[in-house]
Image (cartoon, rainbow, N blue to C red; front, top):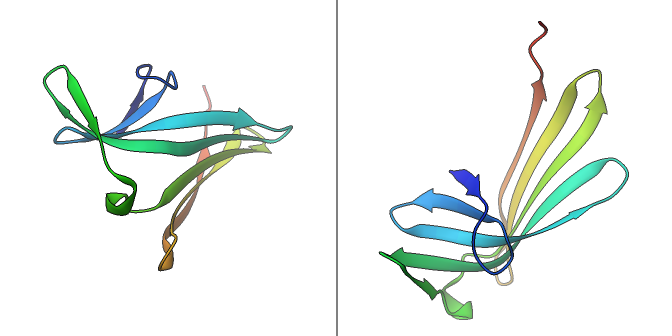
Length: 97
């Protein structure tokens, strides 16, 4: 998947095969958050929003600064009916020059 500057919120995560989601961005003193606003299916130039009953859940991505050129990437997908469906954590470190 990849992020791109587009759509009503200004940023989207494009998953592929025409599927994507609009994201809302927020931040605090240590982290940057990307939260799902709505999911869509794109056909050419048209985007169709998924109805609420068809959405897989609320997606939250966090980039937390850990210092020393490292950050924690956390992804969670939570369903209203089933609870947490996916949770992933990964630590990234910038390559030293």
